Amino acid sequence: MGVARARQCVAGLLIAMLVAGNSRAAGIDNPKSGPAPPSAAKAIGSLENSTRVALVIGNTSYRHLAPLHNAVTDARDVCEALTRLNFQATCFYNLATRREFREVVLGFFSQVNRKHTVVFYFAGHGFQVEGENYLMPTEIDPRTVADVEEDGISLSYLKRQIELSGSGPNLVILDACSDPPFQGTSRPLARGLARADPPEESILVYASAPNQSALDDAGKNGLFAKHLLAHMENTGISVEQLLAVVAEAVDKEARQLQVTQRPFRSSSLTQRFCLAGCDDPDENRQQIMRQLQRVQAELDERSVKDGKREAEVLAMRTADAEREARIAALESEIGARDHKLAELQHRMETLLQDSTGAERTSRELQETKAELQVLEQERLAGLARLQQQNAVRQRELTDLRDAEAKLQALRQEIDGYQAVVRDLQTRIRALSSRPPDPASRPPRVIVPSL
Image (cartoon, rainbow, N blue to C red; front, side, top):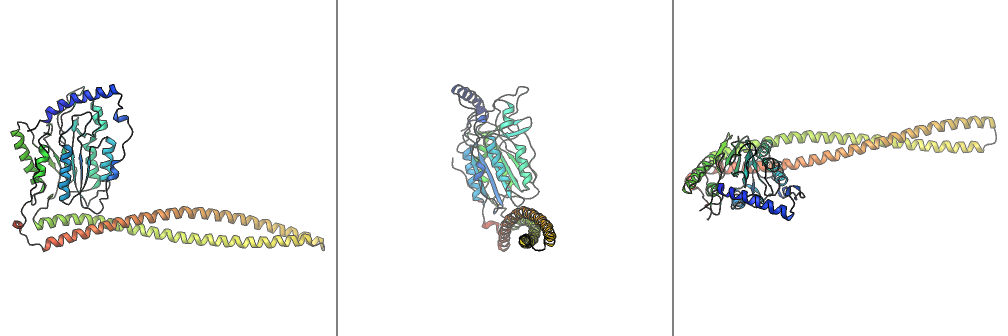
């Protein structure tokens, strides 16, 4: 019915050696030295108006590792299930390089904040090196431990992005427990993934226990994904209960296949969390109210920031108006001096043409010439001040336009939060008006076809 991934990875080592040898013989460039791929992160849409979001990645087409039969199918089916569960699911398949993988993770979590509930699911190869876990892009050529560390995505990086976002509750599923494709030079490498603590307010799930491999080829879906899909849309059970049911089903079928696989999970959750709804109106209402409190706190924080930024913009506009008035006064003063200069120049011309009273004319001419020089110096000084004031105003106008753009962006963000608040309030009112009748809403189970 299936082949244990432990056997598959032995074959994978032979395939990797063969592919590497053929690549060198044919002159194929190492993918690590090739041109950077186009950014897959650009395909991530805005998460602003959603509170339940998911990032799903499935990698199957490995060039230098054993291909996985089910990873993309598993990821695609999980993506569709999460979409039915009202998650805004962002799904990628066969991310080729570490750079592309990191851009997707960063592009997703840069939009996530405290208002979001997050599901992260990865299906593909995953290895541990000295206690750290790494997820593998499809173009990786892991001939040494250093290749895994350099070209893989560490679980620590993923956890850090989750914690920086402040999201919660979170579900992190790594359907990626593989045997290493090589042995370390100093000591043997462990199988599967290493035990790790979950991020804050999260459940961390492995498809198989630490230091164990997971079964990949179990039909249409991998063994873990098959049972996850069979139960994840059941209403009325928490994620902890869901994972316990999945672990029991995986363990039972693995024993029938004469292999060992029991999923592992560790939790830092402080609240009940249900993927398909907790079915209890009071519990659902409490969960939504907790989410509403987080969103409202974000909204309040941004509203305070909006008030401060609006005051800054108003002060900058006032300062600009005052500077514009000073510039206008300087221009008027310079204009008056230009008029006076013209009068003095006309007077000098008149004196030069006057042949009577030579002594008096000479004295007046000297006085007029001295007054003209002083006035010209004042005019030049005024022009310098005007130029300086105009330069300062241009800088301030640039700052003002930047501040106005930031204020506009902040207000759009506030509009998004207000829309989420209204949606959550509507859901709370709907739950408050619904009579508690568990029998009226039986669990919904979707079993994938095999």
